[in-house]
Image (cartoon, rainbow, N blue to C red; front, side):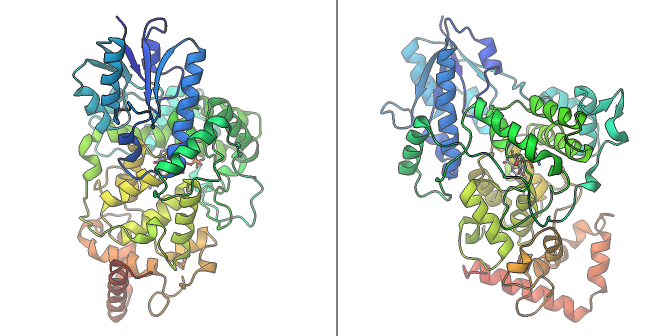
Length: 508
Ligand SMILES: Cc1cc2nc3c(=O)[nH]c(=O)nc-3n(C[C@H](O)[C@H](O)[C@H](O)COP(=O)(O)OP(=O)(O)OC[C@H]3O[C@@H](n4cnc5c(N)ncnc54)[C@H](O)[C@@H]3O)c2cc1C
Ligand code: SF4
């Protein structure tokens, strides 16, 4: 009896567990561009184009490898509009009574498959190092789930950067070397540019027609859309970017949206690159003397540490995680996140990068747009939806713990031991944004005072009961308390006035 093999848009790996379980001489692979997936949040047009183009190319590759593929394009008149709908339609067409799938990276789709009237066997997604059971076993009985300890276990398990049972270079973590401020210039050319071929052009036309009102620029479009191109991007970055990745990982520059970052999350998350292979190549570059240990360790930690840990948290916490709101923030996401006018150069630049590239690097996401949303006390569900929509690497398993947990502290401290908040001085130290800003980063109050300076204290003051007992935050409260009372009152009043203007839709 024929079975259907579901391959989702972020499962474009030839070694996918569902494909391994299937029989290519008999079973039918189902791939579908469906309206439900393309529009449950207003995805960036580049994200939709990347996934549709990569899906079409992967389907062609599977056919070349001897698979029968039932592929549905978005505009096909019979398109049922949803993954379950397409599975039912294809099951009827092929007389299939069983479906094989690799577990999706989102609770919403997992439940949709569980509720199908035809049995769906969901196999674990073993493109990740840690299975759900591994992560649960690690988390069991721990008072706090700090990433660092999980990461060490992953180092031991993979043998990456290990010398016997000791970490290479004598330390597990070289992060203190990785916080250098913005360099004067960047000697890496940034990501490779792949000219759209016929398949990509066809998809770009479709996306331009169907998603023209979504936030984000579709063209120029130069993403890699198959494994070969993604590997070329990786090789290009290993040669030109890795060596300084660690040093300038946290830096931000107006004219350098990429600095030394890898730009490979899109490809790893969709299945075009294998994370372990990426890590092995990074380790080899270090062993060959082409990259210092702080760069190699810093990068490998992001992947076998943070990336795996975030996924573990998402699945451990269950479907309700995205609606957590521990700090009870309820402000609407300001219009400037969707491209509305702002005089804040740091926010304006990060949003413009996001609009143009469906990308912003980690510190822009955490310390500019994330930090601002947190200290402006925006509803974390709105922040979550924005991040899920605007970044080409955003899937709930990785986006939600980064946003709800790390960035908005909405999970009450599962991911982070304290909120990532800062005044303008951190942004000034790590970037060149403040030089070109209408606000004055040195001004704490009064006309033109940097809004981060006002909102930072306003946030800490509102949440004093929760955060003052945290030893890592006690110093912040001591500084606040040392301020003269009149000045404290002015800061709070000006913060309220700023938020009032923002809530009324005035450009801020
Ligand atoms: C608020 C917020 C939201 C984020 N949303 C996403 C998201 O939707 N999808 C996503 O893949 N990453 C997300 N990240 C993590 C990180 O910002 C991106 O992985 C990174 O910017 C991707 O660009 P890059 O490939 O150039 O990364 P590099 O800076 O070159 O880092 C290398 C790789 O490490 C991994 N990585 C680094 N940090 C993290 C992290 N915190 N969590 C998971 N993986 C990490 C990524 O796979 C990345 O490709 C988010 C971070 C924050 C603070
Ligand atoms: S002065 Fe404040 S608002 Fe302007 S760029 Fe600097 S931190 Fe951002």
